[in-house]
Every structure is written in C-alpha cells, then in structure tokens.
Amino acid sequence: MKKGILLFLLSSIISMTCHAQELTVNAPKVVGLDETFQLVYTATAKVKDFNPPQISDFTVLAGPSSSTSISSSWVNGKSTSSYNVSYTYILQAKSVGTFTIPSASVKIGSKIYESGTLTIKVIKQATSSNQNGASNSSNSSGDDYSSKTSIGADDLFMTLSLSKTHVVKGEPILATLKLFSRVNVSGISDVKLPTFNGFWNQDITSKQQISFQRETYKNQIYSAAVLKKYILYPQQTGKVYIDPAELVCQVQIQTHARTSRSIFDDFFDDGYSTIRKRVFTHKRLVNVSSLPSGQPGNFTGGVGEFTISQKLSTDKLKANEATSLLITISGKGNLNMIDEPKVSLPPDFEAYDVKKTDNFKTTSSGMSGSRTYEFPFIPRSSGDFTLEPVSFSYYSISKKKYVTLSTKAMDISVAKGEAGSGSLVVSGAMNKKLVKNLGEDIRFIETSGASLKYKPQMFVLSRLFNIMALSIIFVFFVLVWILDKFIERRKDITGMKTRKAKKMAKLRLKKAQVLLKQKLYSAFYEELHKAILGYLSDKLAIKMADLNRENVEDILLTQGVEKKVIDDLNALLDACEFARYAPASGYTAMENHYNQAINIISEIES
Image (tube, rainbow, N blue to C red; front, side, top):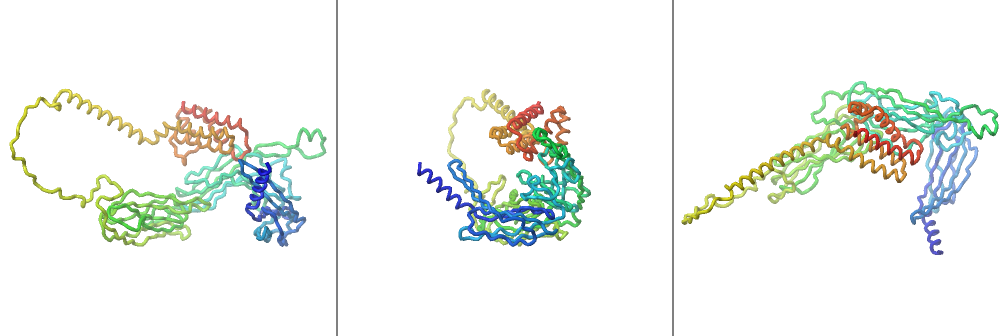
C-alpha cells in the first residue's frame, strides 16, 4: 500500500516537472475608451521571479495579483497534472489608438521565459463585459447589452465578406460568413447557407465549435463569430451573384424594466425571455473577367503563381526496363484544375498512361503545394537520347499576363538490357530483337514405307460428339450474352450507385448508431449528415458538389415522393448541420433524429 502511494506521488511530481513550461498573455484585442479590462499572464510551472511589463499607455487600476491552481487526475493507470500561476492586472484605456504592451518574463528553474508583446486597439465606444465569451475582461462602463428589451438592426446581423469582387476566371476568392452580435445569443437554427452558382467552392472552416471574439465593425465593438469560410474559383465570366444566407438566432432579452419588485416576483420570474431573430446577408456581386486573349498553346488552365521541375525516377536506365519522367508543378493557385503538360518522348520509348499525385492544401489565399505528373515509359533500345524540354504556361495574377515556364533538355544514356526483361507487360507489343532463327528452313520428308490399319468410326464424327459440340457452342453464346449484360450493367456507374444507395445508407447509418450508443453528440450528427447526403447523391445520381436542396426537392417531387417527406428531410438536414453550434439536446433527441432518418430513407425507397 505504501509503495503504491509512493509511486503515485512520484509519477505526479514527474508529470508536473515534465509539463511544457511557457508564459502566455491574454487580454481583449479591442476595448472601449475608459473601459476597464483584465491583462493576465499565465505560467505553467512554479515561478521564482516575475518581471512585469512596463505599462505606460494604460492606467493600472489594480495588480499584479497572483493566483495558483493545481489539478491532478488518474485515468486508466496514467497520471496527469497541471500547475498554473496567473498574474492579473486591471487596466483602463487612456486614449484612442493602437497600443503595444511590452513583453513580461518569468524565471522557471534556471531558465527565463518571455510572453511576447501584445497589441490592443482602443476605440471611442465602450462595450459590455464578457459578451458571449468574447473576452475575459471586466468592464465597469459601457452599455449593458444583456438588459436590452428590443433588438435593433445594428445589434445582431450577419455578413458575407469577399476578399475580392473583381477577378479573372479561375482566380481564388476567400468568402467569410460571419455573425456580429451585441446581444446574448443562446442558439442558432434554421440555417440556409449561401449558394455559389457559377463557382467551384471548397469549405475550409475548421471543425471546432463557434467561438465569439471581440472585433470592431464600423467603429463599434461586437462579439463576432466566423460561421463558414469558403475558397471560391469562378467558372463563368460576367456578373456572377451569390445568393443570400440566412439563419435564426435565439436571443435572450429583458421583458420589463428593472424597477422595484417584490421577492416573489424575482423568484418566479427572472425578467428575461428568449425570442427568435432571423438575420440574413445581402446578395453579393462578383465581376468575373475572362482570361486575356492570346493564350499560349501549352496553357492548361492554371491561374496563380507556379514553378515547374522535372526528374527521372531512376538514375540508371536499361533497355526494356520501365522508368518514369516526373514533372512537378508547384506554387499557389488553382492547382486542382491544371491539366497535364505535353511531353514528347523519343520514338524508341514506349509510353503509358500518365499518373498524377497531389500534395497541396487549401488556405485562405487558395491552394498551395504541388501536383506531380508521372509519365511511365520503357526504352526499347540502348543508346544516347535527349528528352525535349517540357513547357507549361499559366496566367499570373500579380503580373496580369501569361507566363511560360520550361524545363531544360535532358540527355540520358540507356544501357543494354536483357531481351524481354521489361517490368511492364504490354499486349500487342513486340520487340524485333526477340525474333530468332528457328534452325533449318526445310526439313527432310520421311521416305520409309508406311503400314496402314483399319480403324472404326472416330469419336469426332459420332452423334454424341456433335451433340456435345452443339451444347458447348450454345452454352458459350449464353455465357457471352450474360457476360455482356454484366459488363453493361457494371459500366452504368450511375445505375449501380442508385441500386446500392440503400445498402450504402445502411452502412453509414450503422456507424451513426455506434456513435449514438456512445453518446458522442457532435460526431453522431456529423456522421448522420454524411449518411443522408451520401444516400441522396447515390439515389438521385447527383454529384456531391452539385447537391443542393432545390435539385433534391425537384427530383423527389417528379418521382412521386410526398411533400411531407421532403419537408421532414429538410428539417432533419437543418438539425444535423447546426447541432455543433447549439448545446447538446440529449440522447432522446439524437435517437429521434436517427429513427427519423431511417423512416425518411424508407419512404423514399418505397
């Protein structure tokens, strides 16, 4: 028993000692003039000496006050612990502007750790404290937004901001859907996301829950939350419109003024109620210009900034052995829409299908990374050869013109290889060197006498043989007919997806059922949402990129699905899409949504 306690204490001390040591600083990025707020420095280990920052642009009302917190836990035989020391200031802004708080430092053990500087913007308007968790600052001045009895247009609204509104076809645009609030938002529902007709779009929103941060908008302080971020690539020219987005917010407001009331009134009624407020964005216009004329012949649709490089997959080449020429296009832009460059190989080289490998990621400025094209080939003879330069053209956004890149000509030497040693087998291909003399052109004829014997009728000419031959031919044609039908059915990819839609939906719903039993709220709704969209895509033969509610509703109505089923489907999709934004509704609601998904799929199947 004593040994166990000793081991526990020892492991706790070791885990605390090995904890990552650092000093962080936290304060609101935007404050109002004369507003009080907190500046907090946090160290993750025992501090010997705290060297405070020199604060001159703000009035120090209190601090630094220190506090210590220690926590330990033992899970599955593993001990984890944390140790935090916090130093807190209460500050007040003196004037309007942007100010920098210098770095503070602490001594932990024998090392010095610095926090780094912090920039704070001060504006005229003051705001309330702790709006929706936007900051940890305290505030003794400004409007009390939680006590509002009505919601104005400036108190709660949503915007869809675009990084650019004048672009060329294929130029990336960052679209940000953001909610601004000066009231207490307790939930979000009935969300209709914007539709990007005329754009290839990709959602780059992180999977974390919505978090509000302090921001300024038109010189006012708001709690702002990013709902969605998209990268848009225009696919058509002219004036392209983005349809509005909308949603419903549950907002807590004060139902009556806080006048003198009895204790019984306060006990039975806290004076607040929740109302639904619908907010929406405006339709946005993007002017898309066509690419300039005079496109080079080797232009494959690239828009951005790129480089090109080439290399062989192996340094030593032998005749009849496979190798590859690797062409890599790197940079930033619409990498996913670039076609392969044209490569010319010597006549003695046998070329095969090109393979591409992508290694890029999507950021707020577009796709960045590289795409590699692999051109496999087999040299069929030895000798010295020259690979011609590979050229690639793209439209440069910064230079506003077409840029052509070229690789250098590559001299290669192919050594002699063994005949027929090629690692790739190609039907119909024959190497002339493989043809050899079989020996003598004319063979001697047998001249000795031959003895003849009488034999009965051969089996080849018998009736049984004819019947078996006809049967084999009949079975052969039947099998050919069945195989053709099977191949034709397999070629019908859309039909196969439609026929297997229910089966795939069952597999996806099975995963959601496992998450339901584990009561994993966000993961369950994400898997349920994927199952419904995957089923609709397969059943209705619509690509995921083109899947929207208007298309689904039109097709389902033409197939005779009742309007009530379609309305239930839309309501279920809304519940899945915004389950991550609202508090967990409990196991019963999750089970009801799961059963509702099964019923809707069954109704559509029937």
